[in-house]
Image 1 (tube, rainbow, N blue to C red):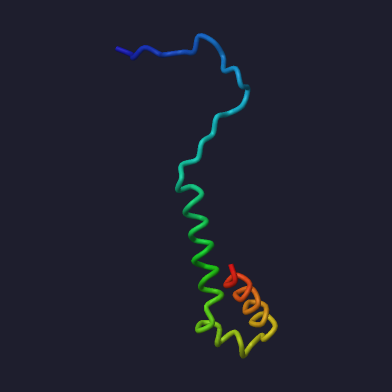
Image 2 (image 1 turned 45 degrees about the vertical axis):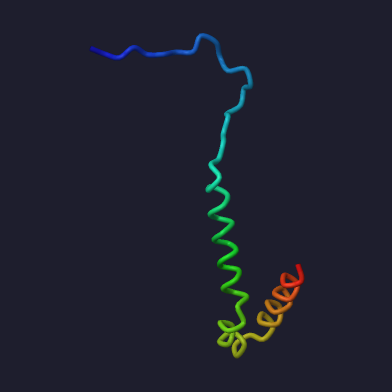
Length: 70
């Protein structure tokens, strides 16, 4: 015995898809970005980078200083 199939009696009026993201769909990528940025900006981990490329290290220190003000 097959189950009855429910169909719409009238079509959707908006003409576009109704897409709703759960809260974690934005929170998790944002959290991952912040964690990776903190790992990059951590000065104790930047010792190896200081010997190889001082320009990048200087840039990251400036970004860390700017972010630390707010």
